[in-house]
Amino acid sequence: MGLGAHAWTREENVKVGILQFFGWRDRSVPLNSVYESALERFSIMDETGYDAVWLAEHHFSSFSVCPSVHMMGTMAAARTKRLRIGTAVSLAPFYNPLRLAEEVALLDVLSGGRVNWGAGRGFERSEFAAFGIAGEESAPRFHEAVEIVLKAWTNQRLSHEGKFYQYDNVEVLPKPVQTPHPPVWMAASSIPAIDWAASQGHSILMDPHSSRADLIKKRQHFGAKLVESGYSDTGRTVPMARLIAVDETAEKARAVAKRVAEWTIASYVGPKHAANVRQGTVRDFGGKDPVDYYLDDVMIHGTPESVIDQILSFGEQIGMTYLMAAPMSGRSFRMLTDKVVPRIAS
Image: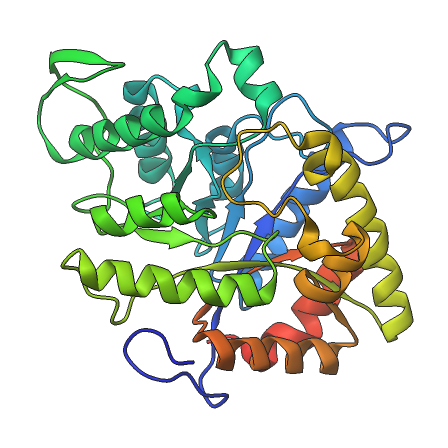
């Protein structure tokens, strides 16, 4: 209940963003149609009540075929006027930090100062193997990269002597339009990741795969750790990602959610991925069948009225001020836009 400045109530609206995956589920469909659909969605979002699009970076998997959120962010910025452009996330260990600082800053310049920077370490072992990075280096590389990016944005010249990177008096250009830099979030699913973010005073992005009960516990833990580290939790924006299916009947929405649960488990978080470098994604699925776990404990699905009620109820429980919605179908996005967002968005 009521994390942050005060207890959240149903009378309060939330900001709503879209967590944009680029799933290529049917390989008989041309890959470019995945991008075309996303670009059409960005234009619709700009005209409606959304705060931001948050672009998901993944590599070497049809689960989401967007290897460059910064390049996609440039396309999103070109098609919109007010929509904020978020990364959820830039997988920082896979970049030279100077290049990462340059790319995000350039996107901020080209978008007129509309970037929300979300950074994460990643956990898909196949990605680390293909990029030649040891999985056990993921967290320290991530931490050092974030430190360097922030230093590059806030200092005229950058010098750094670290475990993985060394720089001497480098001028990183351009600097972001937003000062001192774009708003920053860290993806944090595990307790160690949450503890590190809180120790640095960073806000966090909360993932779409945790159960609602787990998300509540983690949010409370984050708030406590912030205070323990000398930072305030008051008024802090913590976007919470939820997979959402909306349809005219509960049965249709559940069928969509079931298909997406099966796809997600098979391609991303299921038992065959148990060797991944985890950031706290649930491995045992709470002792349930994995599909039932997603349907019952993770996803929000139903009619527009039911989805509104579920979002508001969850908001009351966790003090949610920012919903990062991941629509599970084109129809879910349209109904979310037309029927749900106008009722809940600030």
